[in-house]
Amino acid sequence: MNSFGRLFKISIFGESHGPCVGIVIDGCPAGLPLTPADFAADLARRTSGRPGTTARREADAPSILSGLFEGSTTGAPVVILFENRDTDSRAYESFRHFPRPGQADFVAFHKHGGFNDYRGGGTFSGRLTTGLVAAGVIAKRLIHPAVVEAVLVEAGGSTDVEKAVNAAVKADDSVGGIVECLTRGLPVGLGEPFFDSLESLLGHLMFSIPGIKGVEFGAGFAGSRMRGSEYNDVIISAAGETATNNAGGINGGITNGNRLFFRVAVRPTASIARSQPTIDLRTGQRGEVQAAGRHDACFALRVPVIVEAACAIVVADLMLLEQRIPRIKR
Ligand SMILES: Cc1cc2nc3c(=O)[nH]c(=O)nc-3n(C[C@H](O)[C@H](O)[C@H](O)COP(=O)(O)O)c2cc1C
Image (cartoon, rainbow, N blue to C red):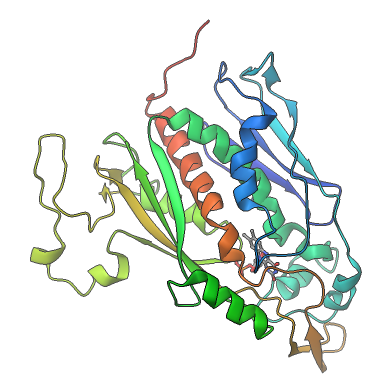
């Protein structure tokens, strides 16, 4: 449903144009130093403002409602809330019965029997990833000295991200992109052979980010075209270091001590400033819809820090399960 993780367990809530969005983190160890200011840098990377992102401006000031006392986590659930202040729902009225192609409007209407909050995409909105990024800040601390870094390496099929985004904006269109994520400093042994393989868990959380349509580990799909002699990562040290990293740092679903590497495909934004054919949900008759309102022409620009957060959350949960994170004592 809306929760993920076993020991570091997150539950996400809120709607894009409701009063707030946020996250509950159950199982966050006690004694972790934390202040609201610690969230600022990562939240700033997710926020809008750059060309190609939405004109909606939210302060993204975290209110920590539980689980923090005298500057440290207490072991109680950490509840972090972000108010929605810069909402303008007028444009969404037309999507209520005329679903945007490629958006979740159609499925939301049918799944929730027409009771869905369609304003700003409701619970399907990228706005909910604010809480994910906040949980990621805590997870990144827990997994230290391991470090996760993600970067947008291309947009609209071009490595010239700025040019691709500007061209899309000019054409009243949108573009997607590819995010690469690298994690250094992981121990050998995180993940399980079958259902909790590291690929499965990372895939689960990556595909929970709205608009993610592909995840590949190491050489990924290109690996299927290689011979074994080319693909196999030769082990060159007793610590398990390999000469190449076609497996992306995972063998048998388990970290092998090399860098964890995967790529994520981000779709182009559904809401474009062009009229597109659709149907009227009430009558089934054909109609037209234009995604008025404020949208990211390339929301992939905002995705790297969300991918980092999702990766750190998975790793933190596995490190707690493997008892790799020592208790903090006074
Ligand atoms: C940070 C972020 C911002 C997003 N901004 C928009 C947006 O402005 N307009 C839009 O149509 N989709 C946006 N999306 C994508 C939609 O949320 C997503 O496409 C939609 O929920 C349907 O899900 P799907 O693409 O996974 O099928 C954004 C996603 C993220 C992660």
